[in-house]
Amino acid sequence: MSADIFHILNDWPFDPEDQYRLVEADDGRQVLQVRQPLGVEQYELDGRPDGAQPFGKPSVLDEFQSRLRDYEEEHGTSDGFSIDRDDFVLLQNEAIIVYYRYFILFQIGDYERTANDTSHNLQIHGMIDRFASRNEDKNDILQYRPYTLRMNATSRAMILIGEGKGDKACAVIESAIEKVRAGAEIDTPTYHFERVRSLQYLRTALREVKANRIKAPVERLRKELDEAVENEEYERAAALRDRIRNLSSPEN
Image 1 (cartoon, rainbow, N blue to C red):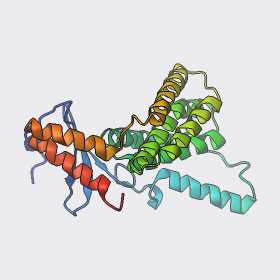
Image 2 (image 1 turned 90 degrees about the vertical axis):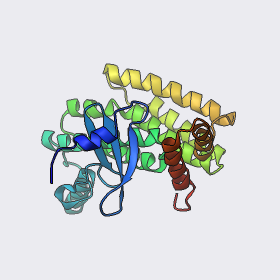
Image 3 (image 1 turned 180 degrees about the vertical axis):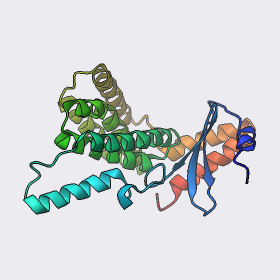
């Protein structure tokens, strides 16, 4: 079998307006593909985005949570547990690939998985904050905490809006605003930028939810579907139907 993927790239030309698709893998599971200018990336939808099982666990986070539990059982306390530079890199690299996936999932309206992925990264942040042996490592990852809190709250709020629970959506956003405001300051340009931007975004979202101007995901997608059919964009219409079906499923 040829390793040349030219035919795949030729069948799916790069278009910045049409970069994402869900396809069925050989075993029937769905995977997420992203068309980049020079190739195609493929992400698992569940578990680690690369499908790996580090240390025989679902994730690096699971491994270090297990190590922490074992340490606490042996010592009766978490005092003395430490994440060194090599351990930090493993956790940071996992957070990066999870970020790549949830950024795309949010764009395509998969708010359940976005919420799960951002929660995963927030747990990594918490572990690094508590146990990283180097302040530089803490700053490297915690400077993105305002952004991750924002994405987590927004995705959870969109799920609640879809369920007709606007009051609960407001409470989620308000809680995120308080967490961003009360978070320990990190002296990096990235942190200050993300903090200001996240607070602005969340406050705007809160006003929109209170004014009932944010529509449920399915309602928004149905409007896009009508537009696609009217414009005879049949491939896009088919993809939108699939997304509406997935969001309308009882499992979601």
